Length: 222
Image (tube, rainbow, N blue to C red; front, side):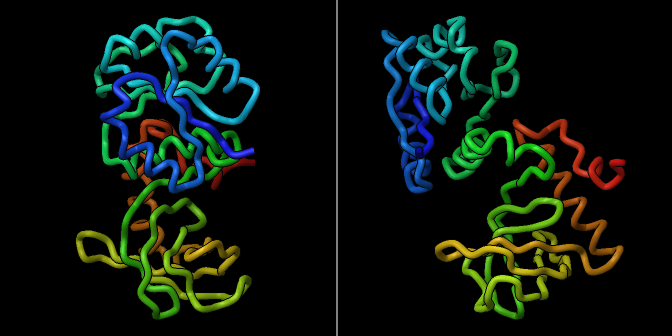
């Protein structure tokens, strides 16, 4: 069953977000404020989330509804706007970035369990071939286009940072889908490890879902 995101409030302003989610295979529906109970039941029995634009009166009323706490609830709101406990804040941003955070919620619990992915847009050389990465985690990244090697093959990677520095990684292609590939990787040296962790910490600090995540905790787990 494909995930469904119900959007309530000021939906015209979120039209680009709807398009980005649909492009990723997410079904998007408009949530009628007059029948919020039906929406909550639909989400509760299926796979999805309720996304409320808290910047308008309809959204504010929906957040105050007790039943909405039964389902994954995201609110588009300014960083300093008060939200009910348990509500995930979605700070207004580009459609691609907002869609990324929504997909994180839809992937619960696996995607948030140990190694959260952070959204980046960086040039990466995969086996000497130019590509780009759209997200990274402690032990991997997604590259588009995919390298011209089969699953299981080792590749050398160089990630170009905005300040001109490069991170060298030893990788292995673990899965291919469409035009991209998931690559498991590890820094090639101690200096690369420091740059890699710096990149991860910066991305996590900007994430409304993972701001308090410690990506290094798993390195020292018993």
